[in-house]
Length: 435
Ligand SMILES: CC(=O)N[C@H]1[C@@H](OP(=O)(O)OP(=O)(O)OC[C@H]2O[C@@H](n3ccc(=O)[nH]c3=O)[C@H](O)[C@@H]2O)O[C@H](CO)[C@@H](O)[C@@H]1O
Ligand SMILES: C=C(OP(=O)(O)O)C(=O)O
Image (cartoon, rainbow, N blue to C red):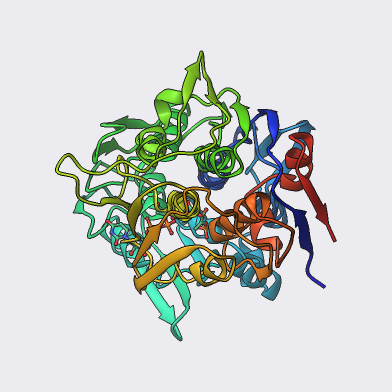
């Protein structure tokens, strides 16, 4: 049976919290150990379901995995078992998480072939893989699609550099193409590349391994392929989505929370977006201090019109924090339009917030208008199911602010990306129990 959280809400929390290593960086970086036969040591790896599943998948593929202690692992892909990719066990594992898709680029570059079922991850609308495959085909990969959701890619010779203009700045797609191009013959230019901090981290790690990549941090990457790459060490950034979630948690529950070691320069628009929702944030060195606030007020545009908070590819505001921005707005003073442009099924969880007493109009699958309650009355605790990872945390934040008891079902969704969230919230004084 799946696990649930029982939450008694309504009490302010207090204390310090350390963000885990970044989930979505970890998925890229761990796949990147496949580009070399030499050891790669990675630290600040979050202990969460998706990352553990990816590590298990690589281990079953023959990658040597050694836990050096705590959050640090050494990986060595010097004896990869290509036959494992033909087994039902592999297909099952790969289907369980989105991150598995990023074995495609390194496997194709190093071994000339790879295959994969449609990967898992959140069910938040269509999540096309075309950008991945078009890019890998430009590098010389030949694609065969079996049925609608099993992909086989191979390259008769070595991959070769190419110029490409991506049809969308796909995060995992760019990671796949970069990991293919670093070992291709000749020069690759990727225009409209995703450029978020986790991709920058991947590129920097590959450079330390001997790759030649220019334009890191921009949407134009130039990659000169090399013959082989060596081992390296890498440390994961703190998880910016967790940091944003904790900012939202503090505001909704009127809590005083210090979020430690945030690597603030890497957070892009995240702090300012929460500031626009009225939340006070103070930088103390590299920590973010959120004071206890009884009330917070959503800004308007200069002409007094209603604010929009929308997602965009980096350096825009990340789609993974829109659910958190939305829940925060339910208790603000003022009105905001939340516009989820990228995914078409990520806002339906607002039904649960409406059941809790929030004032929200879902205009269409992409847009919701939130009229804040200005803390005039609290949300009511209810029983609800977590539909996806970020909606799950948004509902958890709502439950912690609500009057009475809430039960959140299907918390495996939350466990995919938040390490020991119940234990860490208890340490801040939250009444949360895993049942
Ligand atoms: C494991 C991982 O790292 N997952 C993240 C990754 O997923 P992932 O890499 O799967 O997401 P993509 O960047 O490929 O695309 C996200 C969605 O946005 C659409 N799209 C994307 C780019 C664009 O220019 N226009 C556009 O419409 C895509 O069609 C898709 O529906 O990036 C997403 C977007 O930041 C995040 O939500 C996911 O948490
Ligand atoms: C959508 C997300 O994850 P995934 O891509 O793994 O489904 C997320 O991290 O918010």
